[in-house]
Length: 620
Image 1 (spheres, rainbow, N blue to C red):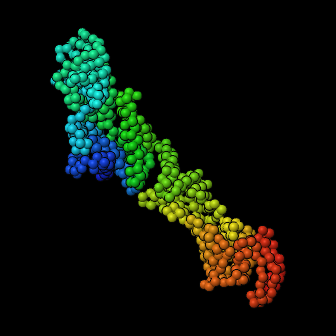
Image 2: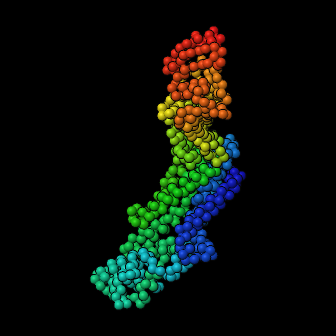
Image 3: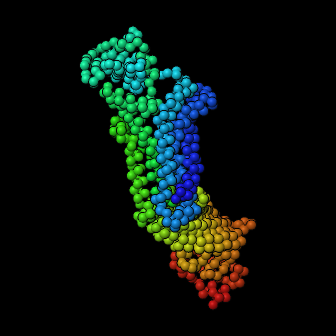
């Protein structure tokens, strides 16, 4: 177990540093972005900006440690899963639950470091950061009025103001506290400056002896403030809760409680430091079971999971702490809620490891997760792709969808018995492969095939052994065309057919058809075919090297040179496409005989003059 512990810690070292360093760079860039206008306006030098970021560094490190821990967990188990080492560990009789031990050792050490940073280092550097921000970026005086903080007037005297209006020289909800043989407390709802002197309005004056008994309680409507220093200077020496050490926070909380003021912001700050110091342990309790359940082999998905969990954890913590400061929740309990919720979830998942329930949960979560990939991960495609099936399975480089598969993409629908989604190394979709009784539908086009391949990047469909139908508009009239081919490609409004035919006859096999080695149909634009043979009752009638028909106006043909409209072949094709019927008026030189009035109706499949056709062509 010692060897395994060292091995896991060695694997997790690099991703931990990557996660921590990436977080620090991200938040540093975010701060500079938020201050970009002030930086340019006040011409702040690059050296001052680095100094500001240096003062923020301890805070960034304390906040980034959970990110590094979670990323190291996902990356480490991703590598173990990819190299089949997880399977080898289990084969040797080591339970998956034992794999949490190395990360617990690491998380306990990091928790001590985080608490020391938050309680001793961050307060000092935070004060310097605020000073540098005011001096170099905001261009304000080094001292400034701070509301809602306790200001130390002297060795034994403190001053507190909730709100200060500098324009009217008015303070609201003021408390003055003086230590000594007797504790004196003065409260006032309003303090205002008159002729360079300060006066208290609507307040009370208390005197408490050393045993805590109230000796004097006086209510006053107006009283002159007897403080020698200017009150503005007193307001400029206070500290925000983040700039105080744990000892100072406890002193302020005790003082506020004595004077009857709710110390919610200070309680939240103190409890947040305790809760945040345990964050690495909580992250390990959640991250290890999750990683073992999903067994993700892609490092990119490890980054995504890290981002999602960190946002949920720290985001919920920030909101709950804010609610605690406003007394919407208990200030002492609010910072602990994320730790409690995530620890309970992680504990339940840890208990389920190496059980049959764990495998069922993994299968269920994998299906939900993969479904969310296709619903939410639409950046892999130019539009949303939805896949619904009876069963779903994830393999190393592909995903299998089995049973009544239905794929929806824009205005196209694909149905198949089985679909394979092929993934690249970044877990992005390269192409989809539908197999077995494939039906492709798009607008008026319906194609049936044995196999279909869909490339989402170019929105291209390849169908093999195809038969289907589509509707084209010729001279303002819609006609249904049946087509078949060894391979059909559908790309936007263009359809190409290799070694196939088109016809307006719905019979199988059709009574007549245009067969070609290559055909290209542009919707409501043109039809282009190469090596075209017109078949009637499976009898080749005419050959044309290149055929081009306009689907926007009266059809025209060319074969190297333009052919007149009297052309027999053109007449056949025009009638074939425009009217859905074929009437032959053949000359003797074309047939070596004479045939008149041979007409076929595609709706009925009836043929007049069939005996004459066989007799003239020499067929019995």
